[in-house]
Length: 415
Image: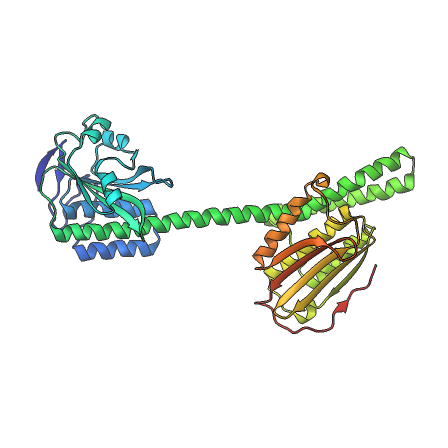
């Protein structure tokens, strides 16, 4: 081992089983092929990214004959680089180098050129760390870009106390290491993006479940309370008791839904399948009075996936809820029928038609949830006027996972 005047830090010659410059337990020095194989294996293992970067920085520093090393990651805007791993840097330098501008010195040159770059003017680095390391003892910096498929993700630095350079073979290896570490950074970025998307979908699903269960029950309570108040003011005990029973039943239903959500983070669909769930929804709709409901479906001849049944059920449930709350309809219809490779679900009424923005009490959110559910089915949802009078909600989606052929519709009894 020979020492360089690098603020009492040592440069390690490439030799087997040599202690690391940091004084910690080090990996044995690796042959170039072995180093690439170890990094590739580390990528495949899915280990923590920072742990992977820290683990392989030490042998890379050793292989390159450098005194120290660092790995920096570009932020999403590509403007600043953040230190994520280091080997052999003094504490004052670590503090000064936590975040630097993306166009700074050799690092900026390497990113702009998209290839390794040497830095000789270290005055800016020295000013940041008060010459604690980047002073007269550090002579050169090598900056190697980390990229994947043309996307710049960061950089790693090697710090030298002499003007000697690694051989062309080692420099080529350092570029390959940069490409592998760039792949690791890209995988981590994609994993974060997928996690964010999954969390957003989960939040949307929870919001939809809350709306479809508790929201509908509370909307019904809101609709019944003025009627209850009028009955009380008019001293109509029979009507007051009827409306009170309606409110009590809706609150009981909302409470049961809330308990289900807290327990399972979802409001469960009836376990006996879509046909039974739709029949239960129709019965509840009729029990609330108002429009006469007719239902016709052919579900016994189809085999829908549970996820498809869930989404169809929720869409029909929301559409019926809108009719009960807003339509002032005399008749309503639910049709579920097959059209070749497509399943079509229609919920219609002969009520007052589409609501205007001035009438809106939050039901637009229910429509957006229905459209999101249709998207999950790979289909579309249309909301428009019904021929003659009223409103028609039409859901269409491909039956990729369904089996069975079209047949006679099983007509449900009218209320």
